[in-house]
Amino acid sequence: MKKLLLTLCCASTLFACSSSKTGGVISGQLDSLNVKRLYACVVNDDFTALARMDTIAVTNGQFTYNFTDSVARIITIMPDRSENPEGQVLGAVELLFCPGEQVNITGTLANPTLSGSKFFTEYNEVDSKVKPIFEKLDEKYQKLIKQEAPQDSLSKAYQADYNSVMKDVQNIVRDFLNSHQDEAGVYLAAKYMGPEMLDFYAKLPEKIKNGPLRSFINTTTIRAQQEKETKDAADKIKEGNIAPDFTLKDQNGKDVTLSSLYNKGKYTMLDFWGTWCIWCMKGIPSMQELYKTNTNKLEILSIDCNDKAEDWKYFIKNNNVPWTHVADTAEQVVSQYGIQSFPTKILLDPNGKIIKISVGEEPNFYKEITDIIK
Image (tube, rainbow, N blue to C red; front, side, top):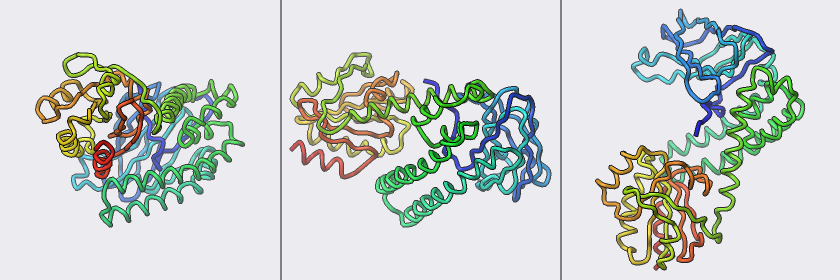
């Protein structure tokens, strides 16, 4: 599945676009930029992969980059890390840039100020309201980190606050979109509105839909549709509902069907994980102990996601994980269950009914399972 190569939630992601033209210039005078070159990372036409990396000469923090493409591109301006051996965080600026624009960047890469396009007047109208909301959230999160709060508690607290903050942000953006069916509206809808952007896109004038942002609109539409399908699927995976059945192949190529496990009269725990997932791996010892002490009452079905086959099989072979393993290579079950975070664990009763869902690695989850199945 192709994914949008775009960090729309990045605070430094900005946009510039006008009518159909060619060329364009991105220039800047940046403070505290002690490097001799920057890189312009340019994505491809459908915004799904890196097309090229151009080098930009820097003299005393000043630079000029001539944009030569005839279609809109996402461009990330970032420093040459080889010139920054101490690992100082310099930041990066990501722009959705159209032919014919001229943009000037001042300040720093971490906190840039941009000028030169009508867009920025409109963008700053929204950003001046949205930015303080995210800064307040980040300040709260950083305090929790300094207090050395447990990672699982930290993640839960942040996610709950983030969801609340996003509702406030979306209200601000929604008000803006009501009177801005233009390129700036396209960018802000894609950045903040999730599947709701589809409603906004449907009302766009044809000159916007078929203009320089045509490919961007098409790609973000696909992403929004996929996000909506995932959310709709997740809404059906609730405690009290029967878990949707599925069949996947284990490490030996043999079919394993979910219902064949809980039909044995045992509880079944679905474990969506991957060897690349740090918190998934940290939970393995707890799963080993849980399985060891409850083998006669509990089946575990670990569903590997987004892994290379050799990595997944190597881990199973070389670690003490004697329960059932399958791979969701086509993201069939991830989509079916609306899985959005890893690890996700779902406990089923002997009839296949969902009785507990856990997102993230929660130490108390294993005790809760033990109490349920004993």
